[in-house]
Length: 178
Ligand code: IMP
Ligand code: MG
Image (cartoon, rainbow, N blue to C red; front, side):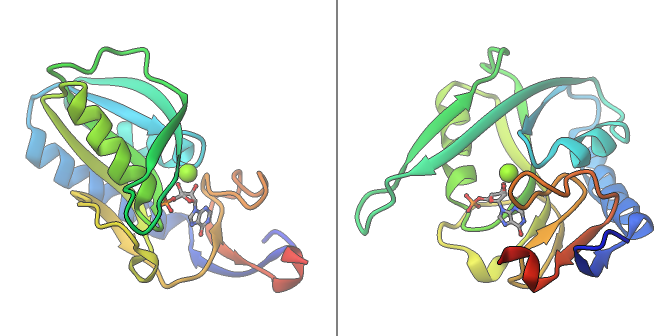
């Protein structure tokens, strides 16, 4: 185990089972319909790589990087797209692949944006969710598992751009944040 990790939440076998369950639901729902898997950079890189290899339909892959700002008491926030799709999503089935849903701000805006562009459907597959942190309600059609309100790293998830390469998901030792 990496010296900065205090506790492993999900080991490789557990992650494999979670990803397998998500893939099964997606396969059942879409059948033979072709989808565009939208990999949200950078956190969902590893999850996406494992998930798409378990999908049976035709899968196009594209990438997006986005953040949100401007959520006030009465404003609903603005999406800032740092890297946009190359695909024209109009008329296509978009499946957003995310690592973790925290406040829900970015994903709710992203879902709206893709609908505005004329996607035939827009759904979300997220490996993890922290329901205790939710500020904006966002429907997540395919969720791996919920976790408590703790910061996690590994399997694509970072702290200050580190730990994405760990094959498991864990919690950092408190002194790492100092
Ligand atoms: P939000 O749902 O718009 O607040 O943003 C979710 C994003 O915050 C995720 O895509 C991650 O990049 C990041 N994030 C939230 N919680 C964690 C965590 O526990 N570990 C690593 N990244 C996190
Ligand atoms: Mg992310």
